[in-house]
Length: 242
Image (tube, rainbow, N blue to C red; front, top):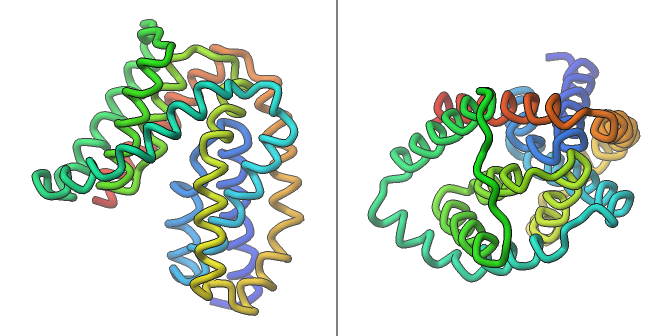
């Protein structure tokens, strides 16, 4: 593939992920990682997607911090961290391919249920924060899908699109920052990656602005419909890749 065309396609893939993340609060790795890996390799996809994810979360948290449900962030995040060892036990008793397929099926079921004219259970409070935080820690440690239980739980809080996105970004920000720093320490940021990141960043920032504009103007029902489609698509992608 021509180098110029490859760069354009990589930037487009990064922007597609940034749009999903800025409009809905999640989806960037699921969209960008496989596309960039396919076009440029894992050594480029891993640090670049982490950078895009970190920048997107920083912009969302900085601009919409008043929308963040801080109690729902720190309780879920703390429960996630403390329950990570339980995920290692899950790996021992449930093979990874089986666990990932079950997770994909559950996402599809949740997404399809969300598309039906039925109301999801309304969950809130410290108890449910801890329960879903533990689920996130277990699934994250075992299968690297920490965010999926949190996405489902926050959807059942029935927040506005802006509050859902901001709170989810508040939850993701610490982990994405840690991942970004670990990539720097590990030497992933080569001169080639740095040049590509500088080329990608302006387009990503414009895309984040467009996604944020859409998020603030989506009606709750339309947002829920789009959210359900995205969750269902993620479940299908997980099944196809497992």
